[in-house]
Image (cartoon, rainbow, N blue to C red; front, side, top):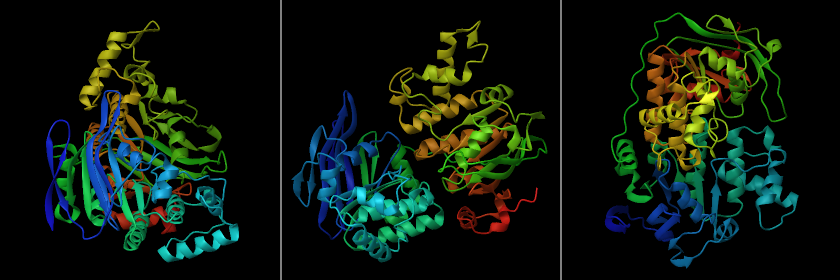
Length: 530
């Protein structure tokens, strides 16, 4: 049964189609508004979730999703409006109060201590002190009940990312939540691990626990949720029955128009290898690092090679070796770019040769957030003779180049030349991608180019990478997003525990096979014999 409900904001009236569920309301927000100075992050948000419902929360980067769930979890206080829990008005003063009410949250970035065991991590989160033997028995019982296999005595540092997420979920379950907030829970999981998580969440919802599911993966939202609420620019655009809308309709509601499709990539006709690497070995720098073992990797002009893998299997270590942040001539047999041995080249020297980099972490690695955009442009363009003459920065030229990046890559800024911190995650990512692409690199090493980025920015960035490859650039993309790799790559290889599989043409692959390789199965693919 459907009915129309009206949610008002300061500028207009938005009609919201609500699929009524025959269960009691658990949480309701009425006219929730959050302002930071003159900026309104959430504008008159009306939202509800029923007992036992799995409800999706969608929106572009900067749409207000994080601000809203932080208020639900007590990390922020509303400027206006009120929350109601079981029809009673509540004020959530902090995360501990939220947990006491019955609200749990699994964050996108895990909050576990790697040097502690599973049981020790769980003990820290519980308000009531439980003896270790009793807690161990409870963990085993609860994990068996929901099909979450967890060894209470193993150190977190020895767990895969998927196993760490099980610990996060289990830690919440032991607090007996009535509402569980999941923020981008599948961004670091294989397809098989995502399916297991969905089984757990569906089983949990049958016990009466409500789940607020935040994701940019629209197919997952349709598969898992009963309803979805879409935010745009801080306002509720619509609440819909997930089964009654297509992913294309959801995407259009999120961005306000039909998002562009990812364009087809040209067939690689070149036999010109721009980069050849073989015999790359790297010992682990610390107990939490993954050693690299006999890595061989090469890329041709116009080719995109995808490197799949679950986080923690050596992606960061490989990226550092590619960029020159880590280098050792004794541990790599061949590292040749454009016919030049660059084994001992620094990151700066590799850039001068025509190699571009896009690190995984945009805050503090790709960009300095407390610097203006012009200053961030200068970080990788300071050797441009047009930008710097006789050791003097040409400010007007630098400003013009920054404006060109902002314009060409659709970077939405609150005003001209703001601090990088004032941009949403998606817009900052478009800026750092544009800053590198505008240099027209001959080779581009990219890590997680669209991680945590909304659908509009994702399509834009992927098209920019395809355009670059179509113009002859060789690209290596390290990503945990299989959809991304299948859209971009000519060939895909898999990194597992520091070993790299053979590079396989896209036509020979599907997500199930890649997912199994990411989990360490089909081990013969990792015997390179080169």
